[in-house]
Length: 146
View 1 (cartoon, helix red, strand yellow):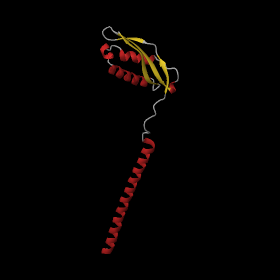
View 2: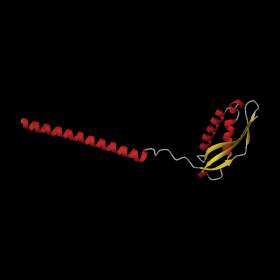
View 3: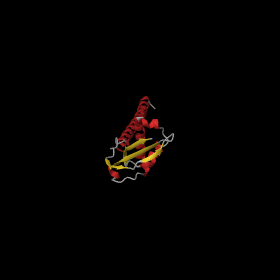
View 4: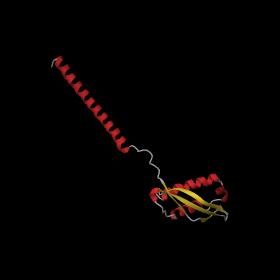
């Protein structure tokens, strides 16, 4: 084999290796582009969901809850229903969650505005879960401690 033949064969091998590298780079780039396209069209979060529209306010009868040290709380609530919930909301879950949340609390604790606001937010969160977003807010209509 002559030197010219060896150089030609070597050039063909280098060209073949360079062609494979280019092919691998092109495949990787195409996969990246496809992945980004899939993310943008299918997997990407659509942004914040629109909050439910307020509907009817459903007032519950006031109940009495036992507090610590032989005190009690008379509490009345009204539920802010979402528009999709309609005019009727069964208040049994709301009353149960209210009793569970406020029972056994100290009168001094409930006397602080900041604590009442915290408990109200907690009650709203529990009711949103219990009613699957049919209830979006709570109002205190009675709050009397003795």
